[in-house]
Image 1: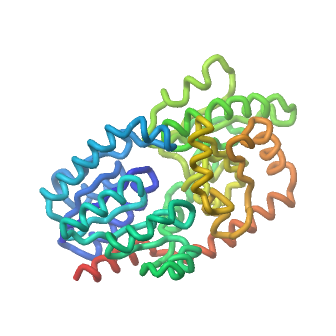
Image 2: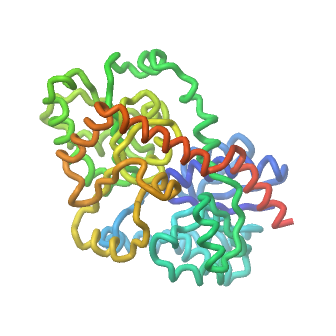
Length: 387
């Protein structure tokens, strides 16, 4: 069968690649075409010849409502191209992976044209824009969710779904980075044998531009504290970005900062603590066991206010939402200051009871996500539904 997958971000590329592995295993004649990234492309080339990647997500991800308006013309062009490609290729199913701003439009189009539509990793309608539920019911043939707290929500809303656990558990547990010793990691990357704080500034250009100036001042404050003068900092850079996205914010400083690409899990595993932009990385840190503080800000108060008006959840981090309470602190917008970040990192490092509680809550988060095999189970359910 022919599978057309659409992922628009780094996390979607990760989950899409694992889903493709499952599709190839369940359907020996699987033919995939996709919007995604290097991970999905690598899986494709391990199973097929030719070209499967239509569009690389790293070309133009945006954040915030004002930023979205500014790039509306480009997005409309991508939508048109995607629709034309689906019509030309005629897949058996269109599989949408998260990325709701783009994928909801494709869902309506694909349904209208008579294609089967599966939505993998449900759009976060439980957090904001609940009116999209009617679109899920109208345009999506089958919804596949990945968080346990979503089950009760979609039950209440009368939306049928399939839940088979969270694919991130497989991605982390199967990563070679989790088996590597600290000594081997330091030798391989050339990092000094000193403790470090991990910095994850997000995967989008707008997130990095918002995070990095404040992270620079945090690093300066933290290094000025005598007991932490020997600490270093490691930026786990997003695969969609380049050093040029980070270095302008470090110019003129003598901060001991290293930038590593494609090393997120290893960087998190060996860090003393992490400062993380809200998103998949925060849940990854919880599953790996890295104490963290989540920081989030949007450039421009208008974008932030619009977002807050739509947000319907008490937390922005998936780990806290899964737990139903705060396992780690979230510093949002005006509370995201270098002083607050410094204070929270110090508490993580100095307050042993606080750190131990956080790690215990991490265990509860992992248990809440279920066991392994989620990607394979979802692929199996998809193939069976199509057959």
